[in-house]
Length: 247
Picture 1 (tube, rainbow, N blue to C red):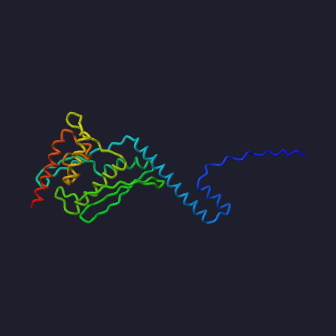
Picture 2 (picture 1 turned 90 degrees about the vertical axis):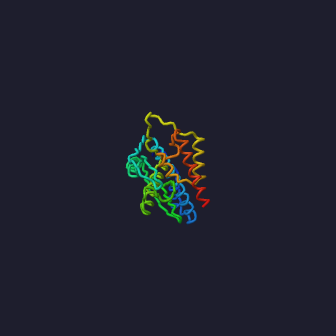
Picture 3 (picture 1 turned 180 degrees about the vertical axis):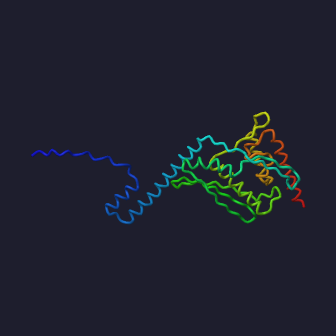
């Protein structure tokens, strides 16, 4: 008698992953050493997939048109009697702008704060994807003694400042630029930027106070028209250091 049964073709198997290999190994009665090796493989697989998801999410976030406005004016007389005035984006304005867009792509952030002997404060911003991969950016600085703050206020000001800038740095976000009266600002060249950076390090200037003095948030934002004034200010800092060393 002829066999008329229809043999169905075998269904194609899905992607072979460490998890499917673990399931197959369990079904075949694999020993603990083999299962342990497969579990390690699964962890590396998960970490790789999480990193890929993080990169995709970060790219989608970067494609968004994000503007963080400078919403607060700060003005005070320094201990040396000089007036300081500048605009900046507050931390709450930065977080309010970025949080909804980060969340849309499964991203979130947190901070770690450390204080060291000598008064240095380090803030680390951790950007994490919902699948578990995270990346970190850290900045550090001394307590902000500007504006006649007490010690606690000085520490709090620095922490807030570093939180703001680490979040902007790790997300690759810039704050809104300010235009001059003509509507166009010519910025310093790469050579001028290198000279300023070298001078800041050489005279051990406080970067944050320097940026505040020239109403910028990053060295790249320094207008070319203020380059000579910036160099002069740093040379004055050098002279001050020399006088203090002679005492």
